[in-house]
Image (cartoon, rainbow, N blue to C red):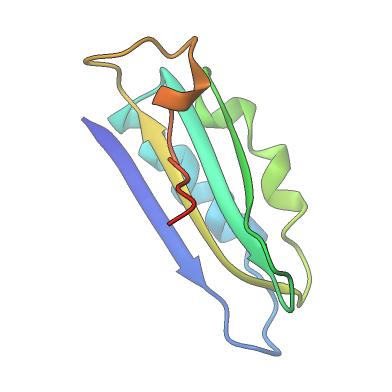
Length: 99
């Protein structure tokens, strides 16, 4: 049981920080053992991934970094642990692959 959300921001539109914080907080009901967010800025060559073994409400400050007109998208996840320890951050989402 997990919660997954995402948002795409068209070029020239402001990233809706408050809406994303609200959605991610609501997803915490689906899992509060771990949380993570992945976002990308316009013209960057790499996603920014932040995750930890705590509830999404402890990571909401990260969404403030996405504010303004430079964020292309953000995906966020809440985890309810069924297998694999949250202490090993590789088990927490988003999972990043080099493929």
